Image (cartoon, rainbow, N blue to C red; front, side, top):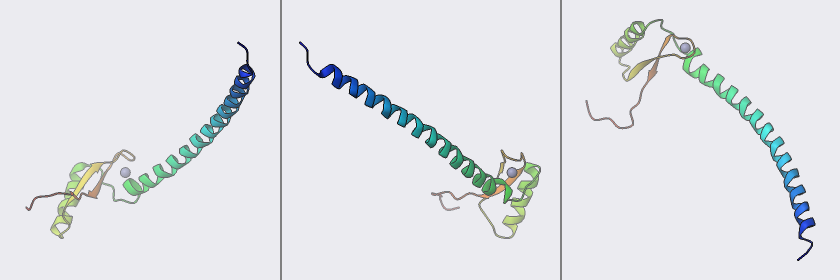
Amino acid sequence: MTSRKPSARARQIAAFKAETEDFGNAFDRERERTRELEQHREEALYEKACASKMRYATKGEALAAIARCEARGTRGLTCYRCSYCGGWHLTSHHYPKRDAD
Ligand SMILES: [Zn+2]
């Protein structure tokens, strides 16, 4: 049994290949765009998590700073080891649910 199916199929394959190439290019562009976005997000994270904050060399210094803040009435602070600079920064930690003290 013969029909026009083979040539229709060949057209389909050609169309599929063209589509796949387009898709590949779009994928490259998307990947490039994603990389730029990640770069910007990374810089924003760095700014927020490190550059804009006070830096403490040790956890002890950070804890002392927290104690000073608490003495002035600022509660809920915690400190973390920064993955950017290796120092310590303070951050306010708000627990969504918290029982009364
Ligand atoms: Zn830092």
